[in-house]
Image (cartoon, rainbow over all chains, first blue to last red; front, side, top):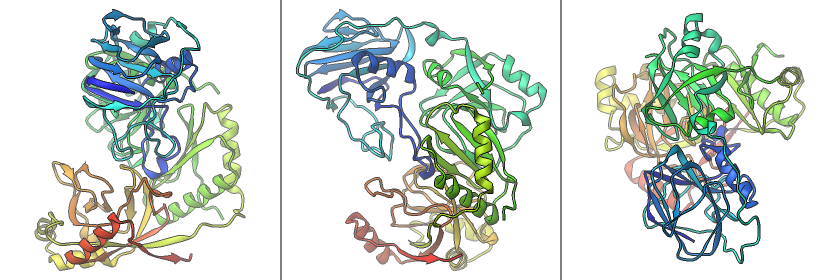
Length: 285
Length: 244
């Protein structure tokens, strides 16, 4: 078990999401940065869909109440285990009573703590990803105890580690495909989308990121249609909203761009006041 | 006979969007639902979800679609196939609603605005048969078509931060039931004791696109009794099969 001594602003258990229930209005959810979460699971020899703890902006203290193999990946929050600095992206062996402290991120936004065998939390509609009104729990609070599968010994992959490309965290370009309504935009609007350096507003969370700079817009709303994580909506006021993993399944604003899977991962490691530019790429047909 | 010529577009690398003329129209819905059944019938395992809205279908695949234009051609030929599978039953669900002023907090305002008595509003709302077009916005939120034009009411200028689960509301030309507590801008006219999204059930959402809904007015006493039965999971919704 893992006991939460202090919890940062937003911590939740996530796997790769709840696929296949969009037709019931259920968001996909899942880890925001799937690249970092998969990497941690691979290092532990877990299935890549195994549940991990997603910690937003660090500042968290956890106590291990079992002997465990863990990996910390994603945003570098200068992790310390019982007051010793430990490495990110490396298999660590912790003993009963060990304390993990995560500080402020040096880079990135979301840190993942993966454990061998994953978290033994409830599975709803095929997924362990927490989401309000779907799973009983949706937010880790101070004092919570998270069940993990007991581990007998440290057998596998001791000290296995990988080096992560820093580009993943400070990418200047976010790759996008044309969205379904891209062709309704004027050439001027299309160029604005490509050439503007956009800033992430403070209005950013697991549902979506609102951007600061606006695009001149005469398109109104449209008849409600499907949206996906990574869809960039253009609102009548000209504000852009990038939908993220917890987004609703339908929306009524023109869908002008669609982030690549990798771009969603990269954007989720950015936060308030970070800047980036969209880079239009072709579908690999 | 297929009377439409839907258009096909890639939507990211994992999905294909198929679009019909952009309007709320029962003929379009029926064409969409027939196509959906055909896609399921000819399904390949790589499809993880098929989501329809008023005038579109989004097919989500389990990974990057290789040769997306081949896949689009395949879908186009499926659209033209005659459907030889068994059609799913269409149900008409009877949804109890208590229009008591305690729940219908916007009834008085609408009554003034529309120059209709509260009794007339309730009558107009509960006399109609509504069609479920799709589920979206929130888990279990049914988008219903068929609201009487006299009840068309703009959304509130400032959305409420908290609309209770079960609230029955009108937003523009649409009406619906909030399946879970949520923020919301629709005008609230009543409350249903029925659960529209129940993860403990094998079918978390009883209704599906194409089904019909009628609202049955109940008094406070009946409301409370049904609510109690819902907690015990003993309440049986009344439904009938609608034949085409």
